[in-house]
Amino acid sequence: MDASENKNITKNNERKLALSKQIDGISWALFFIMIGGIGLVPDEKVPGGAWLIGVGLIMLGNNLFRYMKEIKVVGFTIVLGILALLAGLGDFTGFEIPIFPVLLILVGLSIIVSFFTKKE
Image 1 (cartoon, rainbow, N blue to C red):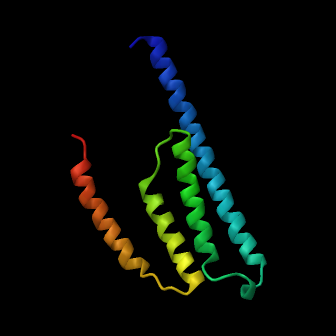
Image 2: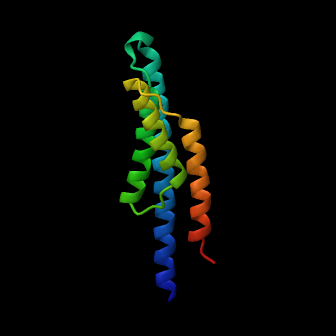
C-alpha cells in the first residue's frame, strides 16, 4: 500500500467519523424534539407507550442510516431499540411484555455469541 492509498483511507475514515457524529447528533435532537412534543400534548391524548415507540424508532433509524452509509452499526442500540419498540407497542396494544427478563436473556445470549465470534 502506498502513501496515496493510506491518505485516501484516512480521509474516508475521517469522513465516516464526522458522519457518525452527525447521525448521533440528529438522533439526540429527534429524541429531545419528540419528548418535548409529547410533553406539549395533554396526557390523555398521548397513547400509552408513545415515547417508547419513538425511542425505538430513533435508535433503529440511527443504525439503519449507519448501515446504509457503511458506518459500523451499534448492536447494543439495535437491541435496545427493538426492546423499546416492543415495549411501546405492547403498552399501546395492552399486551404486557416482560422487558427486563427479555433484556437479561438477550444480554446473556450476546455474551455467549461474543465468545464464539471473537477474533484472535
